[in-house]
Image (cartoon, rainbow, N blue to C red; front, top):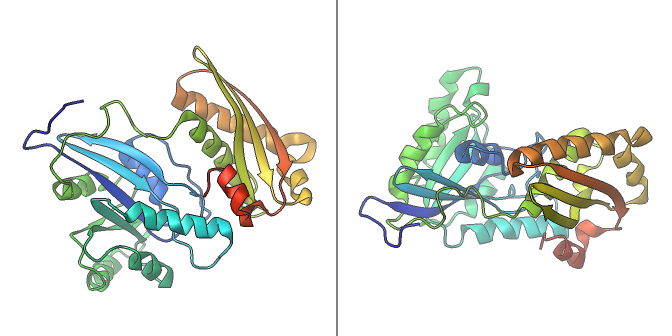
Amino acid sequence: MPDTASDASRAGFVAIVGKPNVGKSTLLNRLVGQKISIVSSKAQTTRHRITGILNAGHAQFVFVDTPGFQTRHRNALNRAMNRSVVQALAGVDVVFFVVEAACFDDRDRDALAVIPPEAKAVLVINKIDRLADKRRLLPFIDRLRGLHEFAEIVPLSAERGKHCDALIAAAAPLLPPGAPVYGEDEITDRSERFLAAEFLREKLFRLLGDELPYGLAVEIEKFETEGALRRIHAAIITGKPAHKGIVIGKNGDKLKRAASEARIEMEKLFGGKVFLEIWVKVRRGWADDERALKSLGLE
């Protein structure tokens, strides 16, 4: 890593904010070029601030993917997630405000309201590939242009990778001059232990449908490395005894499938074999218990 920055080098922190389920994690993964933030069609999948790193020419972006700003639910977990959004905005150099094409409601307004007026904000209009009538895009841009003094406006599709390079090109000049914060080969500051928990939680979200994913958490109880092998023991935390059987599934099918799919993704990211052992624990009311949230790294 260079000690000083050349005149052409820039580096800065970029917060990715927006209401739940607008594609913030998909955008982060696309920009970084590797999956580091879990993705689901369900809102509120992301519970932590996830940092991703992109080196683009002479510019280093340090992205902070935030939980979707939540106004509908007010338990301790959601209050902690909203605090995470506000904290992520403190001291960042640029904000990517993500909305869905031709879809803007009160939840978007609430998310926009937490962006400091003086922040260099880029309006990212995502999911343009899903917009059947492309003629709706320009009036939508004009409508949003008057809500905030955006430095740039970039329509794109994070899922398909369309125009993501245009977003980076538009945002690079907004970063302050400076030396890179991270090395060229780094893509996240999150630990393998943290990523293992997130990958398992994503599989549970997908397998359980709408049954109870918001009442689940994952706690890594043991993470050991032996050369290229990683031995991981994970506990799935649920708030009610009745939910334990749902998570396990008939003959343990759901639990086995979640473990298998998560292990495959871990091996891909970690570059080595993974031995993954998981079980289910009941911890009543954990989502509204400040101490429980702290022990799970959510507070």
